[in-house]
Amino acid sequence: MTPAPTRTTARADAWVWAVRLAKTRSQATAACKAGHVRINGDKAKPATPVRIGDRVEVRGGEWPRIVEVRQLLVKRVGAPVAQAAYVDHSPAQPPKVERPAAIGVRDRGAGRPTKKERRQIEKLPGREAAKERRQRR
Image (cartoon, rainbow, N blue to C red; front, side, top):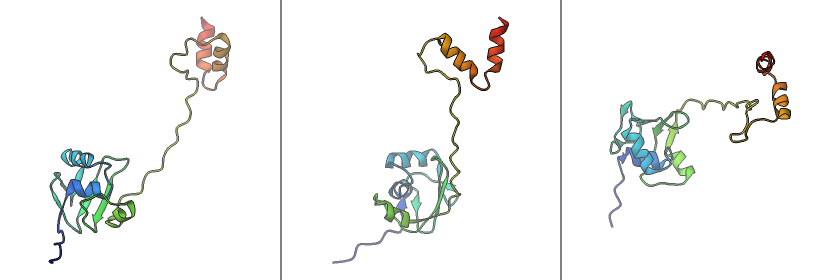
């Protein structure tokens, strides 16, 4: 029995999906078609061959991912195996910014505020201008 030949290339969309840089194979294919995947600086079509040592850039997620291929995969594998298939050269992920809660915003469909609710809204910081406008009437 002869040993199975080892792969020297893999499709770009299949590799991006297999190493979990895209959630689905169709998303990986769409990213390639849209020009969001680059291999060694060149835009990659879905069938572009990926080789060991290539630099793959994937845009379109929360931040751009830049990885170097260490292992060729064509089937989806577990996360630890997938992470071992590339070396990550991506820039650090930006910190998440927490937005302050909206002040004085009513739920849609709540109707007009009652007199009591209006007084509470006017006591909120930053509402002095609205209060002055109402008093001028």
